[in-house]
Length: 345
Image (cartoon, rainbow, N blue to C red; front, side, top):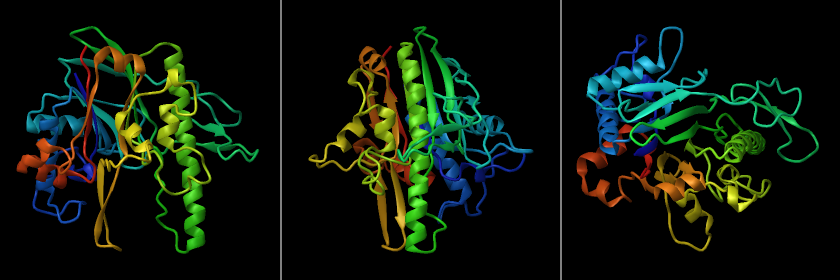
C-alpha cells in the first residue's frame, strides 16, 4: 500500500462557504495561477501519486458553514478519485486543517487521539494534542506552556487485505518564520520564540512516539515539519532540529524512526540537495528549495514491509520530469510536493 503526505497551498480558497468547488478563471491565492488551473492540477497530482491514504496538510477550512470532510469528499467525487473518504482530527482556527483522504476499499481509518488532557499547570508526558504542554525547552530552569495551533491528527489504520494495523500521526509543527518583525532585533527575538515553539511541539510529538514504541505499535509520523536536519537559524542555540528530535536522534538507536531523506541530509559530507518544497524569494529573484516534508516509520514497520520512499519532485524525480503534464501540475498545484512510502504487507 502507498501512504503519502501533501501540503496543498491555499486549498481552502478553492471552495465556497458551502464546501463546493470554485473552478473559475479568477486568480487563486497562488501567484499567477487561476483557480480552475490549481484545482485541476491538484487532482492530477493526487491521481498520479495514487496513494491509499494521503495526509492533506493545509486542508480546506472548517468553520461556521464550512466543513473539511464535506469539501474534501466533494473534491474527490468531482474528479472521480478512488480516495473518496476523508477523516480529520481536531479543528483549528488557522484555516489550515490536518486531514486525510483514503480508499475505503483498501483501508479503514479512525481518529483516535491519545493522552490525558492537560491545562499546562503541571508537567505531563505526551498530553493530548489539543491541550497544553509544559516544558523547559531552552533549559534555563523556567518551564513554559506550549500548545499546537494545528493539533496533530492521530489515526488508527487497518489494511483490509492483510489485516495489518498501525498508528499514523499527521503533523504540521510551528513555522519558524519571522513575518511581522520590523527590525533585526525583533527578527532575532521572534526567530528564537518561534524556534522554541517548534522544538517544544516536536518534543511533544516524540513523547507520543515513545509511548507507541513502548507498546510495540507499528507507527508512521508524517507531514510538513517546517524544519530539517541541520536547518539554519537558531541551531547554535538548540542542539538538534525538530526533525531530529521526532526521529529520536540523541536517544537509544533501537527507538529511532526511519526516514532516508532526513538521514541523507544529516551527513554534512554528502553532496545531495534534496527538497520537497519550492518558494520564490523576491529579494533575490530566485527560488529557494527546502526539505520540509517527511514520512517516518518505526523500525519494525520499515523492516517488515521493505518500505520504499519517493519525493514527487518536478525536476529531481526523473519520471515526473519526463512527464510534462505531471511536471506542470506539480508546479501549479502547490509550493510543496508529495512524499510517499510504499509498504509491502
